[in-house]
Length: 234
Figure 1 (cartoon, rainbow, N blue to C red):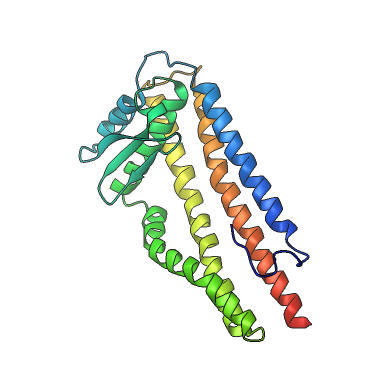
Figure 2: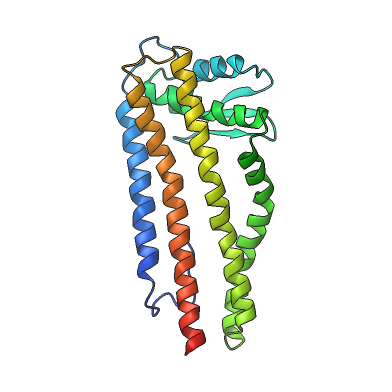
């Protein structure tokens, strides 16, 4: 969450509250959706690990290691060391929710293998975004201290905007991975026609968390722009 020295007296703080409400709802929604279908076993009793393995082998990918990681909904694919990390409720579970989450991460591995452009672009953005995120607040504070120096303030806002750019680029990466996952689990018979709607709901709920994050960051950025535009006019 991005806070500023104007936390208690700017008229646009409500934008942060709206963003917080959106992200909290998205987090609750994905957890409740996952938990609902985590109790619904698949017809063929395939675990999340086995589903991911089948998908990767079908795509001709044999250099990715599938391993278990601690936590809940902490699943991720790491392109740097070619590891597909599945959380404890996914790795050994044969539920529809577990299978689809594992398939989604396998979708990221396929993107990596096929050099999917948005994914490659996102990876290149990471160091730039991290640098900008660390620099944005100090620049804005310094700009305020130096009698509202607009050059420093605008530079800080621009650095913060890099976070929004990263999250926007993330959206097609995540939606594409989910589309690949749903196609694969259906084509390979990992889930059947009756189970497909449940799997789609799980992955859609997960995708909404990325949309919510982008919306929240946009509202924070809008607040900064409006706040300092007002100060500039005054």
